[in-house]
Image 1 (cartoon, rainbow, N blue to C red):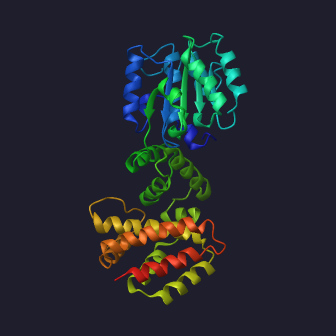
Image 2: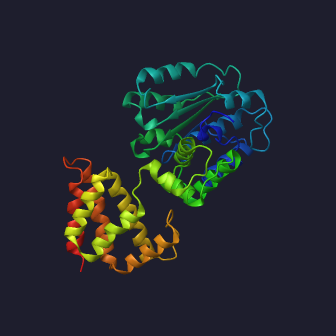
Image 3: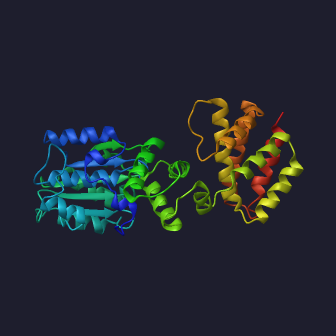
Length: 364
């Protein structure tokens, strides 16, 4: 078994392996088929959405010696060098740590020379929005007059920070967060190949915790697999690993809110924190629980409730019946505000306690 972490071991080697971003794949592969590859691309979108993977696939495709339609063969010298990270003509620069004018000047000098082995020199500039103003202007000059043997691929998570003149010189592609089914598809592939025993609910919780980033989901699966070992991973293992509050605790606090029991709810919170729960993490779990309650109440057919047993799901549905629509929306908003305040509070549990009182006093 390879010692590589999952997100590197299972990084797509062909366009057909990519999950999601179909609009980007279709446009770029059509350009490869028609021999109409641009000299500059700009990939924008949230982290873990596949920007760098797409950039490397494009670099491999334009340099492949035995291209199959638009797919790299992964067997020629060019493909093998890029796959192994040994290609001298594929230059990856992290703008977060190389953001100055000197680095871009060095790039401009290096770009004058023809590729040493590959057909094209490909420059992948990650987090391009972090370039200094002078460095961005120097890069702009290069993008305006690029040599025919060079291709630039800029990636950014904050497109609004890019200077408009650079954006206008590139073909722009906007990447989106992956959906739950797409992330599950990627995780199930790894589970099958690695022969990992894991409950479906646990896999769903990993997908939910990833925030729409497949890379983060793969990293979390890797960590929990290393933590648990060869035995089957169940939902409780994952909750323990993530430090998530038990659903029964969240349901109990919600019952206090329904009953408008301020004294009982504050005493309950005191017991919870005495057990060692972190107030900020507990608040995040509560918001997630109330979101599930809200969605089930307002849109019962929507499939968002995961990592719950049938009994827990029935419980949350019944609790939803005890809230008015405006009450649950008020509660979610109030706890969201409390979550933000917790970061700066000298008494970490105080914003949550105040929020509980406000939610109860608002309930009719």
